[in-house]
Image (cartoon, rainbow, N blue to C red):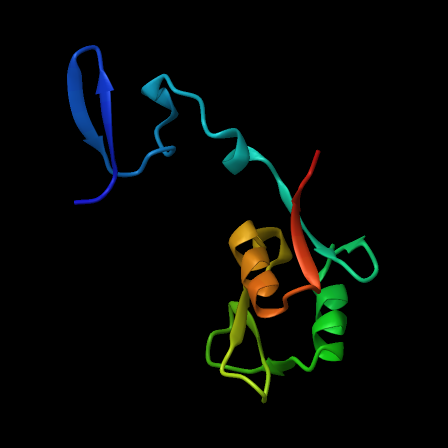
Amino acid sequence: MSGVWLFRNGVIRLVENPGADQGEGRPQSSSSSRKKVLVHLPTGEIVSSYSFLEQILSNLGWERYYGGDPDLLQYHKHSSIDLISLPRDFSKFTSINMYDIVVKNPNIFHVRDIV
Protein backbone atom coordinates (compact mmCIF):
# COMPACT_ATOMS: atom_id res chain seq x y z
CA MET A 1 0.00 0.00 0.00
CA SER A 2 1.27 3.44 -0.89
CA GLY A 3 -0.20 6.87 -0.51
CA VAL A 4 -0.73 9.47 2.15
CA TRP A 5 -2.49 9.00 5.46
CA LEU A 6 -4.91 11.85 6.24
CA PHE A 7 -6.31 12.60 9.67
CA ARG A 8 -9.45 14.70 9.55
CA ASN A 9 -12.31 15.15 12.01
CA GLY A 10 -11.04 12.31 14.17
CA VAL A 11 -10.88 9.85 11.27
CA ILE A 12 -7.72 8.56 9.61
CA ARG A 13 -7.74 7.18 6.08
CA LEU A 14 -5.33 6.33 3.28
CA VAL A 15 -5.46 8.47 0.15
CA GLU A 16 -3.71 6.56 -2.65
CA ASN A 17 -3.48 9.42 -5.16
CA PRO A 18 -3.15 12.67 -3.19
CA GLY A 19 -3.81 15.77 -5.24
CA ALA A 20 -6.10 13.95 -7.65
CA ASP A 21 -9.07 14.57 -5.38
CA GLN A 22 -9.25 18.29 -4.71
CA GLY A 23 -12.40 17.81 -2.64
CA GLU A 24 -10.27 16.93 0.37
CA GLY A 25 -10.40 20.48 1.66
CA ARG A 26 -6.69 21.02 1.37
CA PRO A 27 -5.05 23.21 -1.25
CA GLN A 28 -2.78 21.72 -3.87
CA SER A 29 0.92 22.32 -3.26
CA SER A 30 1.94 25.63 -4.76
CA SER A 31 5.19 24.19 -6.13
CA SER A 32 3.40 21.45 -8.06
CA SER A 33 0.77 23.81 -9.50
CA ARG A 34 3.29 26.26 -10.94
CA LYS A 35 4.13 26.09 -14.61
CA LYS A 36 7.74 25.27 -15.41
CA VAL A 37 9.97 26.18 -18.32
CA LEU A 38 13.23 24.70 -19.58
CA VAL A 39 15.94 27.34 -19.96
CA HIS A 40 19.08 26.97 -22.08
CA LEU A 41 21.66 28.50 -19.73
CA PRO A 42 24.36 29.61 -22.23
CA THR A 43 21.85 31.79 -24.13
CA GLY A 44 19.25 32.36 -21.40
CA GLU A 45 16.50 31.39 -23.85
CA ILE A 46 13.40 29.42 -22.91
CA VAL A 47 13.02 26.21 -24.88
CA SER A 48 9.69 26.83 -26.61
CA SER A 49 9.79 24.18 -29.34
CA TYR A 50 11.26 20.81 -30.14
CA SER A 51 13.10 22.25 -33.16
CA PHE A 52 15.01 24.62 -30.85
CA LEU A 53 15.65 21.82 -28.34
CA GLU A 54 16.82 19.43 -31.06
CA GLN A 55 19.27 22.01 -32.37
CA ILE A 56 20.80 22.40 -28.88
CA LEU A 57 20.88 18.66 -28.23
CA SER A 58 22.50 18.05 -31.62
CA ASN A 59 25.26 20.54 -30.78
CA LEU A 60 25.83 18.61 -27.53
CA GLY A 61 26.28 15.31 -29.37
CA TRP A 62 22.76 13.91 -29.01
CA GLU A 63 21.27 12.16 -32.05
CA ARG A 64 17.72 11.20 -32.88
CA TYR A 65 16.98 7.60 -32.01
CA TYR A 66 14.26 6.02 -34.08
CA GLY A 67 12.81 3.40 -31.78
CA GLY A 68 9.55 1.58 -32.20
CA ASP A 69 7.22 4.02 -30.41
CA PRO A 70 5.65 6.57 -32.79
CA ASP A 71 4.42 8.69 -29.84
CA LEU A 72 7.96 9.48 -28.63
CA LEU A 73 10.90 11.56 -29.77
CA GLN A 74 14.07 9.94 -28.51
CA TYR A 75 17.69 11.06 -28.41
CA HIS A 76 20.86 9.17 -27.52
CA LYS A 77 24.58 9.80 -27.31
CA HIS A 78 27.17 7.35 -28.57
CA SER A 79 29.36 8.18 -25.59
CA SER A 80 26.77 7.13 -23.00
CA ILE A 81 23.93 4.74 -22.30
CA ASP A 82 21.51 7.62 -21.68
CA LEU A 83 18.32 7.98 -23.66
CA ILE A 84 16.05 11.02 -23.59
CA SER A 85 12.42 10.17 -24.35
CA LEU A 86 9.94 12.98 -24.96
CA PRO A 87 6.28 13.00 -25.96
CA ARG A 88 5.95 13.79 -29.68
CA ASP A 89 3.40 16.51 -28.86
CA PHE A 90 5.22 19.52 -27.35
CA SER A 91 2.09 20.49 -25.40
CA LYS A 92 2.63 17.30 -23.36
CA PHE A 93 6.24 18.25 -22.52
CA THR A 94 6.20 18.22 -18.70
CA SER A 95 8.56 19.17 -15.90
CA ILE A 96 9.53 15.48 -15.58
CA ASN A 97 10.82 15.58 -19.17
CA MET A 98 12.59 18.86 -18.44
CA TYR A 99 14.36 17.49 -15.36
CA ASP A 100 15.40 14.40 -17.35
CA ILE A 101 17.14 16.70 -19.84
CA VAL A 102 18.74 18.74 -17.03
CA VAL A 103 20.15 15.64 -15.30
CA LYS A 104 21.64 14.32 -18.54
CA ASN A 105 23.06 17.73 -19.54
CA PRO A 106 24.37 19.40 -16.38
CA ASN A 107 25.23 23.10 -16.58
CA ILE A 108 23.45 23.45 -19.93
CA PHE A 109 19.78 23.53 -18.92
CA HIS A 110 17.79 24.66 -15.92
CA VAL A 111 14.11 24.33 -14.98
CA ARG A 112 12.45 27.49 -13.66
CA ASP A 113 9.00 28.39 -12.43
CA ILE A 114 7.02 30.82 -14.54
CA VAL A 115 6.35 33.82 -12.33
